[in-house]
Image 1 (cartoon, rainbow over the protein chains, first blue to last red):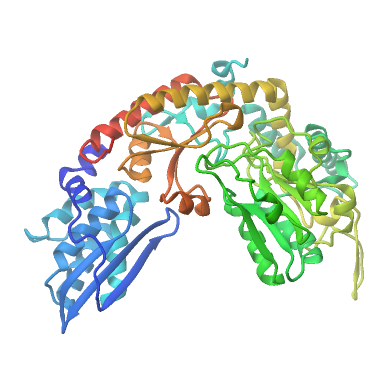
Image 2 (image 1 turned 135 degrees about the horizontal axis):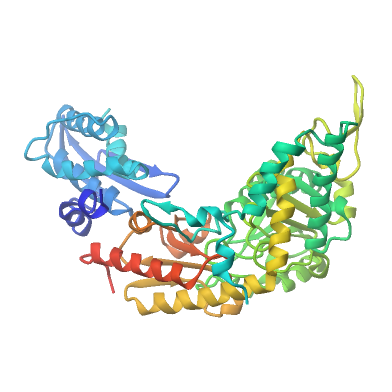
Length: 140
Length: 412
């Protein structure tokens, strides 16, 4: 086991270096702030809903490579999806990472598999789920 | 000078491995490691001396009481207090400060009074005062900090004035290692009739401190940062102030007589120490102080200055590192606080952990400072008497790996 192989993979570093959908979205229909009190990291989500579809979504904030890349992947995946579809991805990801269950990820969702390496580093799991927990506050 | 290589052999944990690598422990500002002298004292207490104190008429209880009280005497000598009864045992520095806020504070602070702290305090020297101020309608004023994390005392006459009732400042910052110039602040506080509390969590362990020479009214510190067990803290107070303080917690040990209707309270120090304390921890703490005295606090401080100098020199030679803290080595203790530009401190901490190197990452319980500096946190390596240049070399090698893994994002 090594961080280089398990965690700091190309795909994660790429999302960290060039986060997708990063910034403030105004106007928006939903705005939610997530926080990891122990490390002080904050992550905000801005979301614009059109009837049942997530039309626009951005995230903002400073954090470690895991929380930032997870936020980037999350926005990329749920953009254009219905609330229900987004919630299904969210549940699948959290199940895979928190319950260690073997979930099937589609090709689109492939980047998420890179994040699963975090399971070997329990103190960092909260970084990987921060963006998803924040999204859950909006769509649950 | 002290021989850190020899001292290191007294610390069993420093002979162990972390993640398969020899442990490089650079987080003593959070909690120090313990020498076998302290560990053996804990062991001996439970095997040969265990019994409750201040109660039994039997031999064991008398023996435990005597050993417990010997630590109190040792501490009073160690910090230059005039007698042992002004040494109050608590659980930690946090509890010592809360004791002052809740006991002295509730009696002496009222609406409109001012409590002065600084922007570089640990949360334990912020939150107890906020709780008190909220309850009493008092005001908290902050001494601002300069960009190098030293205190900016330009407007001190406006901050500490006739409304000020207490000034509470740390001896050394846990976040940046800055050693504050406290003497003028103590004089200033006293000139307006305010008390001065010195938060010695990072001070008592690294520098010779004489509470009567400094003329502080309260001094708070923890055993676990100075080779002693966790769960033992100390509050020193001037006798005339402690004498007037009402009990904080009620219970056993702190009474002189209890009837169904009311109780009368014991004299110092028992009045401020309710319930069975951490007896083994207090007894073992004496061995920690004796260890520090044998090495010499002056030697420890010098050793830390030379390690800090070496660490800063090596960190400066790496590109892409931002350092926090003052430049003058005489005004800082064995702490280096830094960031690898573009890389979050938690990522740095994880990579170093894999190399067996323990540092602290995050806000170090000093969020107001981090907010002022507009950073989420820092990486902090802190040194003690058992650290060597090789530990710093290991840190630097670890940081080179961080830079390699994050090469694409590290900003120069």
